[in-house]
Length: 103
Image 1 (tube, rainbow, N blue to C red):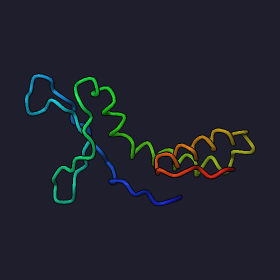
Image 2 (image 1 turned 90 degrees about the horizontal axis):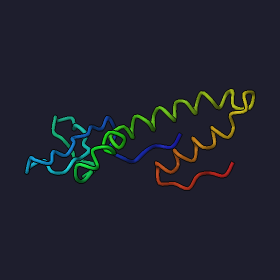
Image 3 (image 1 turned 180 degrees about the horizontal axis):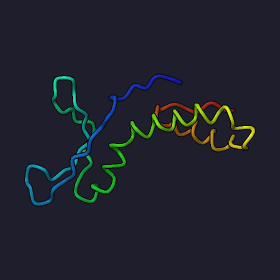
Image 4 (image 1 turned 180 degrees about the vertical axis):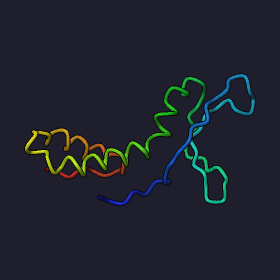
């Protein structure tokens, strides 16, 4: 599988707190080897608290889908899973910012 270029996971989510002037915006971050937080994305106001956990799970979801695809490819034809495998390939390519290969 192609190498990814984003900040390695795990990512974490710090939700927005509407009544705290210093935390009105949520954000996604990673922990650097020196223990400091590295901001990855500002998720905006409190309404974005619903999307923040999904965004923070992105590296884990990518890896899980990539692992599943590796295993499914061995049985895809026998169990008619080609369409699901193709959807997984397209989603992984989209996450890498690539155009999916035509299969």
